[in-house]
Length: 321
Length: 132
Image (tube, rainbow over all chains, first blue to last red; front, side):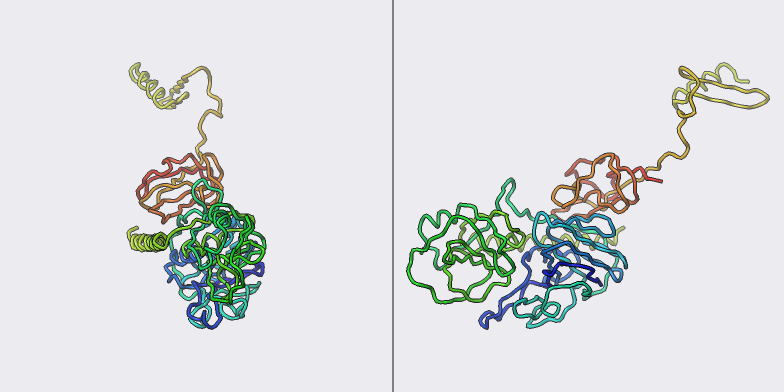
């Protein structure tokens, strides 16, 4: 059990999302970096869907009210537990009274804190994610504040510290975050020059970015067809191009409908890369095929399955010493 | 008190152990043997309570990965002062990593294994001169 001592008003309880209500105008919410969220759960032996605390802004301080296991996964945060520095992927023990302090975030933009069994909040419409716009889910549908108590679903046991090697945010030696995309319904309606620019040039993430979407700045994109589109369903990952010609990537708290033309859609296995991108980071879009997208999904599933298998193996080996 | 053979053997023993001074009291006699240039100064005699060395051992089977690559921590180098509980490295098994930590505060010797080297459970990875 953890008490929040201090935290900027941006952290929310999230799981993998609330699915099945898009047609009624309710988006999925969920973790901005689902990969880090999953690893934070795996390291404690939790289900993937267990709720974690998503922390996009620091500094933050937490006090352990009782002896507890915990995991911290994501951006480097100069995290310390009673002064002992923790790596950016860590699962281990904390004693009652110890204080976990997070400093400035580097190498990413989100940190996930998990507890055994997940953070205990009620499930609403099948999920523990926070819907900020609709003000329900998570902890009373709001961001966390000082004094909030986070309870674990399960009891803690003495565990051996664990860590994990997350995939790198950028390709080796690269300066840009590469996002693999599939074409969208209106991709062909953009000028050849626009498409060439979009699929090869760098776009910068502007500060006008949040859980709903990230606004990018880069080569202007021009749609050649005339007439406005009627509003239609959109989903996280979709890259829209409003009138100004600067793209927006819809994300976890995406609107369920929109009328802007779409130039591409970021594949699901790369959404965590946007989630860990900060204002000022450069991204590049790489057009891939549906088969390649499916391969990326299979690769991600295999990665997590391998992680789960190895953790089970180590858990088994614990009894040997 | 000692025969010449015994004296020779005493001197050989002193040379073998690097001793500079040997004093023996017995049977009314006092023997004092000094090797080397001059009388050894008090400071040359090793103190009885030298810093004890603790061994930091591998927590499992896997490849040794140093701290400070992509884990958000500062690298730990030979001769560095470390605090109790400080993460000193990881044993990596295809991505899953077992961190190992300093058992006490002290000064770290150089890593006794190379980055990427496979280690077994219990292999000594570092030595730590414990601060009293």
